[in-house]
Length: 424
Image 1 (cartoon, rainbow, N blue to C red):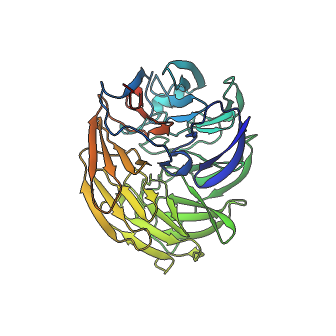
Image 2: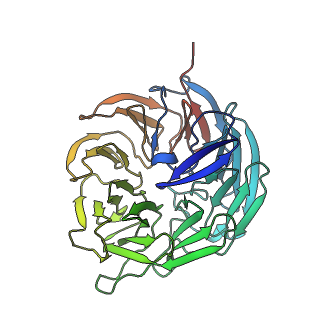
Image 3: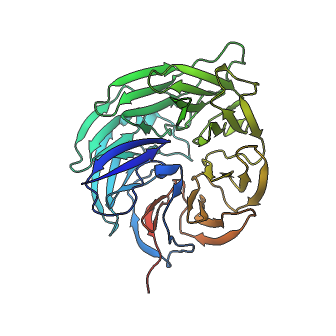
C-alpha cells in the first residue's frame, strides 16, 4: 500500500491507494499541478501511424478529459444525445474498454439544448483513492467505487437551466470537500455548493449576488472550475463567473471579495502566482486576463489597487492558462502568448493554426497544444516563440489530454489514443 498526494485545484490531499506502478496519477482536470507534469521522454511527433501505442473507439460523445490512476483510464460519455450518461473504464496497457457503466437515464435530455461545441458528458471526473466522482448536471452527480463500479452516493437535486449551452463546469476536490459551481441562465440559479465527499451531504451553499451599484447582468451563464488558494493562512475558493470573480471562505462559504467585469460564458480555470489569482473573464463581452492580489482583496474590489494588472489582447476563451516558473502561457483560439505573471507584460506571441479549446499541457520543457481539427503543436518553452513540432490526427480534440508515465492520453471526437515513443 503506497500513499500519494493529489493536487487538484491547488489543494493537496493525502490518500492511500494500492498503486502497483510508479507512474504519477492524473486524477482530475489538468492533473495534479494545473496542467504541468514531471514526465520525461514524451514524444514530440506523432501521427495515425507514428508513436501510437493504441487507438480505441469511444462509444457516444463526450468532452470530459481522461483521468488516470493505477493503470486505469476513466472518462464519461453519452451514446444517445444525453438520454443515458456513462462512465468508461479503460485499460492503460491495452486500450481495451473494461467496463461501461450506465449511471443515469434522463429522458428529459431531448428537451435540453446542448451547444454544438459542448456535449452531454463534458465535466471531468475526479479520482480520489478508490473512489471516482462524476457530474452530469441535471441527470445527477455520483461517487462510485472504482473496484466494483457501485454507487456510494448520488444526488439528483443539483439542477439548473444552462441556457443554450448545457452543463459544462467541472467540479473540484479540496481535501474532504467536493465543490460544484452552478451558474445558469439569467433567470435561473447561480451558486457554489460544497459537499462532504464521503456522503454527498451539503456542507454549504452560497448564492451569487450581483451588487446594485453595477449594471444588471444581461447574461449570467458560466462554466468555470474554481481554484483554491491559501492566503493569509485562510483557504479561499476563487470562482470566476459571469460579470464577476468572487472569493469564498472554503470552510463556511462566506463571500470574501468580489470584482465586477462585463464578460460572461467564463470557462478557463484560474491559476495562482504567489498571492495573485490570474483568470480569464469570458468568451463573450469584455474579454481580459485579470490578476488580483488575493491577499489585499476585501469586499467590492472593482477598480481598486487589488487589481494588479489586466491584458486585453489574445485572451483565452476556453483554454485554461498554464504557469511555468515566472511565465504565464495563455492560448487564445489561435494565438499563444507568453506573459510575465507579476506585471502582465506580454513577452511574445505566436500564431498557431486551428481553434484551441483544450487546455495546454507542459512537460519536460515543452508546451503541448491540441486543436479541434486534429492538429497539434509542440512549443519549446523559452524567451521566444519556438515551434518544435506539428502533428496531425484524424479527428479534432475538444477535451484536455492527460499525461501518464511517458504517454499522452488524448481524447478526440470519437477515439482515445495512447501516444508514446515506440522503442525500436
